Length: 128
Image (cartoon, rainbow, N blue to C red; front, side, top):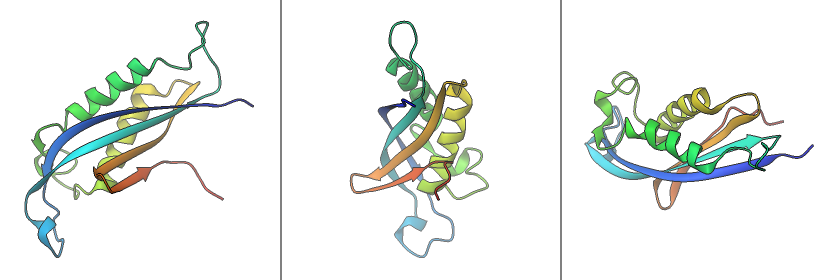
């Protein structure tokens, strides 16, 4: 069966403090995050698209916009859970999946780059 994987990239900036971390990241610091969103589709529409990149990018920017230029430790759920890259990626994935999954299109993964050399990939796919 044919599958189409689409990926968009956007970015946002925010600050956070890692509670309980034994080092410098326990102090407030910021990142210019890069957010990659990968969606998967089986079928194309009448125009030959799985989903317009603009739709994915707009939703990604809208959802990341809640975090943009904010202190994450003050925003739910990060006022209760540590705003680690892993937790932020899961948060973004959940919201993107709720916005984009439609029976044909499925959010497959969110890749969140904390720096140019460090990222986390969050997916809910099972590996065997």
